[in-house]
Length: 228
Image 1: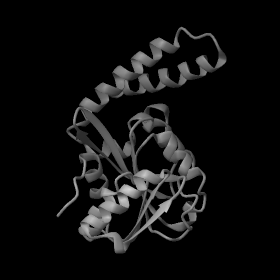
Image 2 (image 1 turned 30 degrees about the vertical axis):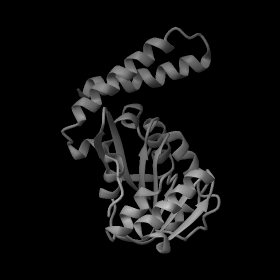
Image 3 (image 1 turned 60 degrees about the vertical axis):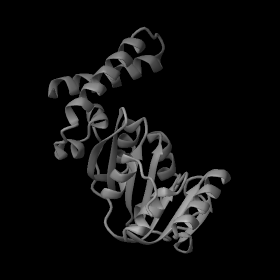
Image 4 (image 1 turned 90 degrees about the vertical axis):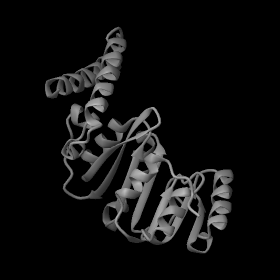
């Protein structure tokens, strides 16, 4: 018996290589660790969540699908209650890119741990890509997946060799372009519409912060238009 796994979580699993211990932070119902264990992509799993209720549901689901004996359940704000070195693959999926960046920033030891990161931002992907580039993380792969009416990006990341990305690259990364996904034209078109709306809204602002944001989003928009 297999758990129901959304297309975006299937994409995350597809980016993984077999590992010893996978930590799923923000596990919610815990379906991804169950799926990874059932399919031999990890020998053990850590299922972590900020809230007790979803963690309890994740535990019940693991018992139902027969993986509870290979899963450690941790109530944790990000990686705060997870010991450094206790996993070799970290998964953060289904939360905002700014939230994921905050989790990584609060666990600087990850940069020395040699971990593989599987990241799937629900929103603010540009904030996450900006953070990764500024702090030396390299996006080895970034793929697109359609889940219902939405397009999501999922990425495999390792520390070392990362360089700052331009505003346009923070929305459409070099790693994503290399994939030549058939979904990329639609994804790019959606980005362009969103950036045009953002620029139009900010252009009416009068504060220094408004002007800073206008420069950033206008630059990103110009870069993507030139590449269309």
